[in-house]
View 1 (cartoon, rainbow, N blue to C red):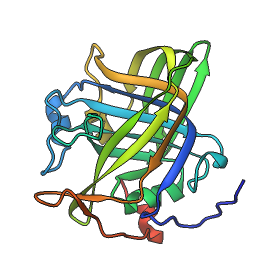
View 2: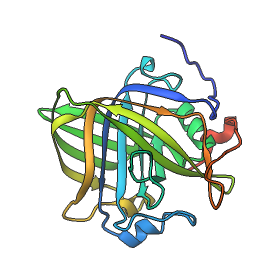
View 3: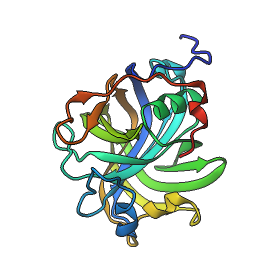
Length: 251
């Protein structure tokens, strides 16, 4: 096991995470217009304005190449016309909440709207509850019925977009997960109507697009970012190193 200390990570360097506890799913929003308004010019929300959420916990520093142990929640809007390899819709990150200053600085330098917060996932008698807080205030709580992992392993790619220095950037993130079965999302609560994250709340009744829970999900942050725009979708973004003050950038 290596000691990570307080070093600042180079955002141009790739990172690997293995065996995280991960809840990942999507829904149709209560306010489709508010969700669409969060997508910047140059990108198009999916026709149904689907919202995605990933809540995960990395319990030990041995599970990552440089991040250490941490928790993270990101959510955002599914996009049209910018699919990942394999056909999964690309996504625009609207919120990115992590317990680690190291991860936050790395993400901010890559254009993510990173904020300070914590995610907890607890298993209770065949159910899990996943809760995300920002600055100590609970924001999102999901309850799910979960079974056990079997012989199924799923994998693929996601493509996520951020904005840095006025440019839209994207990268493709590979993942492999061992999903549980059965898996049923029972409820999703957005707990703070006065917070901007409330715009992404699900409609009632809840309509789920896709989802899984895995006690062992692995993924990578690729080293490169690509500039997105007319005639520039294959142009690598210039590398930028994280600054010490990057951790103070708000969501």
